[in-house]
Amino acid sequence: MNAAETAVDEALKQYEAALNASDTEAVMRLYADDGVFMPQNFPSSVGAGAIRGAYDTVFGAIQLTVKFAVQEIRQIGEGWVLARTNSAGTVRVHATGADTREANQELFLFQNVGGAWKIARYAFSTINPA
Image 1 (cartoon, rainbow, N blue to C red):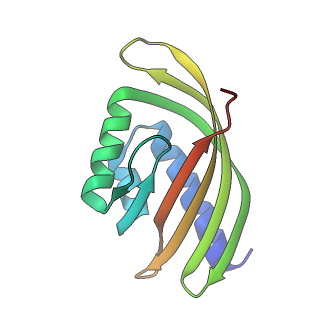
Image 2 (cartoon, rainbow, N blue to C red):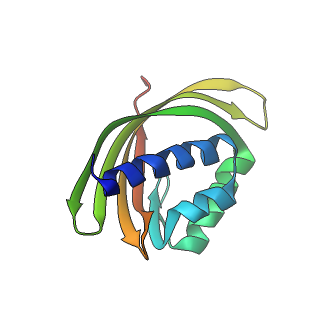
């Protein structure tokens, strides 16, 4: 991996830790100000305010315990890196205490913003059977 790809790999580790800690502030440090969060079955959250609100809502409803497996990290242009991951673990629903299996595929587009690699676009979808 080149330096950009290595930095994105580290950012993905930080994102995993932020999700598992339900830490919106840590998540926000990883996003570009004009980033876009595209969760399955929900409208896109565009920009820092909307992204913050989306993660606050997610973390208020569930507790994630997930592990990311990096499938691909590839620099696709000056200042742009694509990352493809799979994640697996559990989700605890706060309202009921119920745990369910979590398994997703994810696509991240990172942008170099002021020397730091930030999430510019992030989308995921489940790979759990229906």
